[in-house]
Length: 137
Image (tube, rainbow, N blue to C red; front, side):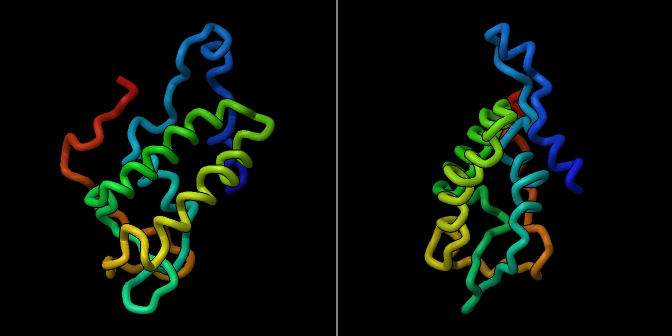
C-alpha cells in the first residue's frame, strides 16, 4: 500500500513544470478524485442518528460539499508537484481543514443516513453523466 501511496505524490511532470506548462492531472475531475482517492483515505464509520461522522454517497448534490471537494482536488493536484512537503502541506492545510467540516454531524451532510463500517471507503454513488467532465481533455 505504501508504494501505491508514494506513486500518488511522485513528480512525473517535472519537465512540464520546468517548461512552464501545466502538468498532466492525475485525476480528471473532482468526481474521479473522490471516487478513486479521497473516500479511500477517509475510512471513518459514517451513518445517521448519533453517528460521529456524516457523509453522503451523493455528495455531488450538496453545493458546499462540491466547492470544498473541488478545492481539495485542485490543491492536491498542485501540491503533489512538491516532493518535499507537498503531501504534508495538503493534509495539514487542506484536508485537515475541510474534511472535519464535511464529516461533521452539523455539516452539509447532516441529514444523510448513508453509512459504512470502520475501515470501509466512504459511501459513493455515481453522479449524473456529464456533471464532472474529465479536465484532461
